[in-house]
Structures are given as structure tokens and as C-alpha cells.
Image (cartoon, rainbow, N blue to C red; front, side, top):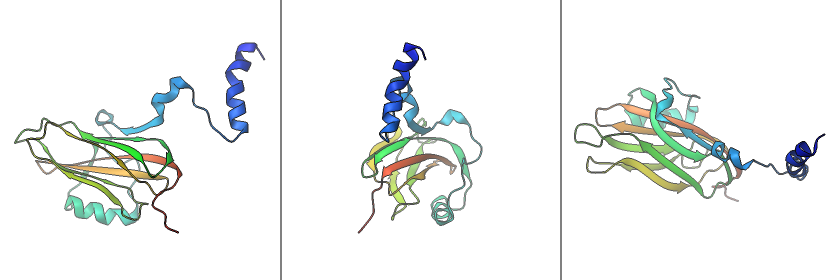
Length: 169
């Protein structure tokens, strides 16, 4: 083994021996899960769980979900589920004729699956929300947005939670 290889791999080997994982600094941009509008996905990455389907059906009023157009940013790996940063946005001109009416986020493994619901008017400068939520365990988080023309856009991201929140006892 050459010295450069040894220097590059020694911290990773030491970290893995201690039960830790190491992520190179240049790989930090990959540590965020996100659904981007430009992905153009025509179907969901994963079907919503059965217990969530009814809630989504009620929220959409039976309209089909277009699984694109919603930008849902969450960390891919969460150390503590009690404080998880979330950013939800939809690109919209926010005019009287074309705007986002409402957006919602569901975490199906939480005791209360609906974790965020916001409403917008055309007076809002943009359809974007940044907040913090709690996640009970590792799960796929779903977000929907209803536009003024009635279309429903959706996005979803998987989140790995190391220390769970929302647990009693």
C-alpha cells in the first residue's frame, strides 16, 4: 500500500472500527434527500403505505397526483428525529390565475401522519415553507401541493432516522 492510499483510508478504517461512519467533505452535497421539479418523474418512487392512501385521497378529493413539481428538501440521514429541517417549495408565478393554494407533508410512521399543512393566496411572493418537524422513525416522507387549476403535484423522499422521536414510554 502506498502512503497516499494509507493516509486516505486510515481515518475511514478507524471510524468504521469504532462503529462510526465517515463522509468525505466533498461528499456533503449528497447528504440531502430531495425531490426536484426538473426530475420529471411521472410516477411515485414508492407507493404510499395503505394507512396513508386514505388520507391522501381525502386531501386530493380523488384527483390524480402528478409525482413531480414539488421540491421537498430533507436531510437524508437524521441523527435525532426530534428536530428535522424541512424545506417545501413549488415553482409558481403566484398570480391570480396561476398559484399554489395549499401544501401538506405526511410522515406515515408518525403518530400523527399529517405533520404540516399550509395555505397560500396569490399575494404570497412564492410558494415556499421552511420549518422543522419531528420524525418517529426511518420512513419515506410525502408532500402534496394543490394548484389553483386543481392539479395536485407530489414529491417524496426517504429519510433515515438514527434516534427516533414521537415515542412514548
